[in-house]
Length: 329
Ligand code: NAP
Image 1 (cartoon, rainbow, N blue to C red):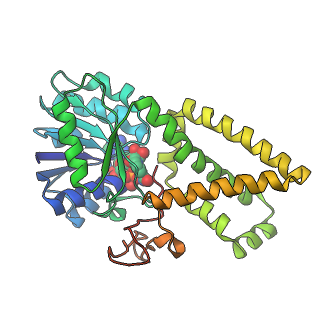
Image 2: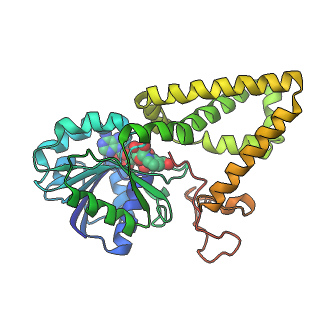
Image 3: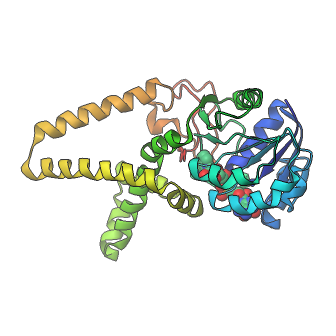
């Protein structure tokens, strides 16, 4: 599909793209670049690519597909380095969890004849680094692309085919709409998780140990989300501020109503809401984005790496291949 794929950043998402691209033979060569020498060495030991360099400009030389897989806060620095080295006709994409901001940062560095097609695979886990990735991460998951209307349609179709070959379902969307949608489906839930786990951390030490000892599934699920990468999530809230504040405002209004229902003992209102929300959960399972299996069919990390071990495809109770506990940022 491509002659040379350059991956800038080789953590969970970058290394999963590398593994899936190799497995499916989607690029003749894969060039890997990252910031730290130790991470580059790890990628080399794992055999994720064909060439390895700390020089991002060197990695993108002659690449017909470049995907930035670094935290959003690193984009400005990365684009400054790679902009002058991009090959005419190349597709430049990314996997960042916010889109309006990254377009603003990337666009000024895109030379004429290079196609900027931002992307966001809605797939992930709470683990980080090159060891955390796995080739099946994108299978059955959505990947959203947010190209400007003026971008070459053939280039967009090539990238749609690439993500399709990685196993994703692809949707092309307006960047602002993407940011608003993800604010409520991903960003605000993470903020709530970080907040509730932080609240427990602020409790008296004695109470805290009780909470940990008797933690029920509700709190446990929050802690899983709140274990997601601090740098990545810092960058998301710094760069998708308006959409997050809009959705957080709505959430707080609804929470006030629920608080009132609890205070006045309005059981009917609570039951009506909980019945409605249960239906949403069921429709997510029906849409194949989650499974109803015990523990939702999630694979558990190995002791050595913490990386998820994918459930076998044919596990009947799992139904669909499910990964990692999904901090699908
Ligand atoms: P990760 O596992 O922490 O990997 C990040 C990678 O970026 C590391 O290889 C890191 O390498 C590298 N990096 C950091 N700063 C860099 C710089 N200035 N130049 C070059 N490389 C740099 O993170 P991830 O989960 O793969 O996330 C990467 C991107 O995917 C983020 O933009 C995130 O928003 C998006 N995303 C994440 C998820 C998810 O659930 N995790 C889902 C969808 C999209 P060093 O060790 O060398 O610093």
